[in-house]
Amino acid sequence: MSQFIQLHLLTSYAPSNLNRDDLGRPKTAKMGGFERLRVSSQSLKRHWRTSDLFEEAMAGQLGTRTKRFGQTIYDALVEADVKEKSAQKWASQIAGQYGKLKKGSLEIEQLAHISPVEKDAALSLVAVLASEDREPTEDELRQLKSKKTGVDIALFGRMLASTPEFNVEAACQVAHAISVHSVVVEDDYFTAVDDLNDGQSDAGSAHIGEAGFAAALFYSYICINKTQLIESLRGDEALADKAIQALTEAAIKVSPTGKQNSFGSRAYASYVMAEKGTQQPRSLSVAYLKPIQDADMGGAAVTALEQQAENFDKVYGPCADSRYSLNAMTGKGSFSELLQFITE
Image 1 (tube, rainbow, N blue to C red):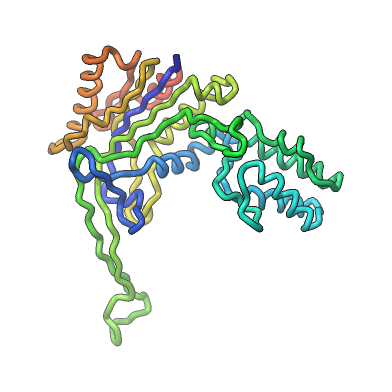
Image 2 (cartoon, rainbow, N blue to C red):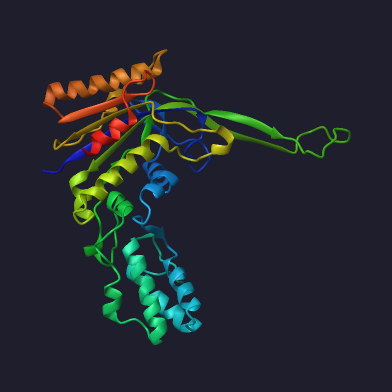
């Protein structure tokens, strides 16, 4: 039976535009018949994964997600004095192990997640090919892909259609963050004045624009299958614990960067409930199916979340072996104790 760690977060953002749709407006979704503000799981995961906080904690253990791996190999071959024509061919052979290449290009058609071990193996092969002035063998190309994967790949998964034996099942699932209340997206009408405009001949603005924004208290849900994570990391439980703590800290502290300079929309989670156990996971989003409408929005949202967890326990039996919560609005709990709880 797998061991699951579930995180329930409430994070408040002042007026902002964290995650934009195709029109540049904040993303929304209908829930319970009401319009809610939304931040996509793709946006959340990317900002956590690429944050300084997460990268520093997991230094040397993270993969590279790119279409341009072939160009990296080509550049390394050329730098090693391999002729351009040979470098082009050998680079395409190596990059082709991670996906189909675009016609006449070294670019992989879809983003490929390359683990640190695989990148090192490819660059080591480059050195061998350059020194021996030959193209790679089929056996050498097959050996490039490894089941020893990076932490981010183990957490968020990888699919290689050509070689499914090297696919990695994601150990972490992330829900779209959704506002616990209904919202109306507003428009910020703004102008900019030319600094050299003295107002004598032209008193008007040099630029006029508008940008959508909204404020919201978001509910976020994360589920980590710790058993799966340890398995993907080849049994390294210490590394799995370190990854879980780093991801948890990033989820609590790292904000999406959409329109960051315009709105200064940085926030820590105001409330976190962590759960551990072998029980089947479940989100607590149903606590907000009816939008929160209260002068004390934060307090009401916490009460609704805790009551929903208690109600699930009453109906189904304990849905977690243990829980720990912190509340930055009331000063309850400790961040360091939370990190210890989720991995002890």
